[in-house]
Amino acid sequence: MRIFSVLALLLALFGGYTWLVLNWSYSTGERAGYVQKFSNKGWFCKTWEGELAMVTMPGTLTEKFEFSVRDEKVAQKLNESMGQRVSLHYAQHIGVPTSCFGETQYYVSDVRVVEMPDAERRAFEAPPAVPAVAPPPPAAPAQ
Image 1 (tube, helix red, strand yellow):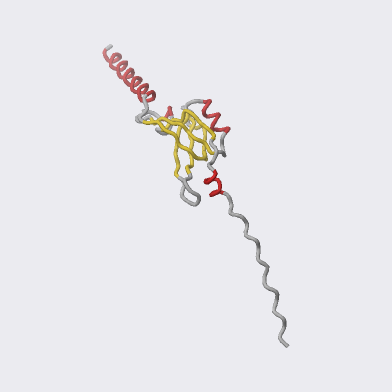
Image 2 (cartoon, rainbow, N blue to C red; image 1 turned 90 degrees about the vertical axis):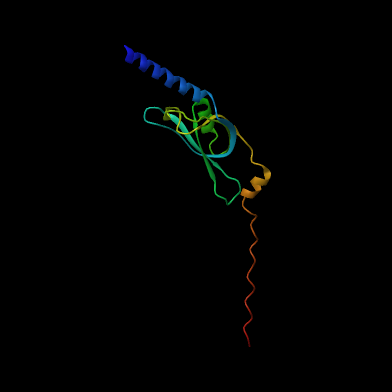
């Protein structure tokens, strides 16, 4: 009987710890960029996992932000906004005991499609075409 009490206590402590780390966030914030990968994966616990490409300037390396989504409505909004610049609101949860709740520490809770600023849009657009210069006429044959 004593072993069942110890197991029940350990299970209650594990459940309480899991509840605490999932409901208390270490940090919150927003990141903007383009979702380049988003999928529902896992063997037993299916979770939505994604990758946001954050581009600072054209021609520079992109920084990747890996995130998890637990809410189906947020996952649907993300799927609908693929290919557009988005802002993700997230909360960081450190110490989540299993990957059944997500493979990353960052849990996205909201998605907004954002317009690209004019200066940034111009930097990504192709430069205007340079008019072709006609070659000089052939030289007259010498006589």
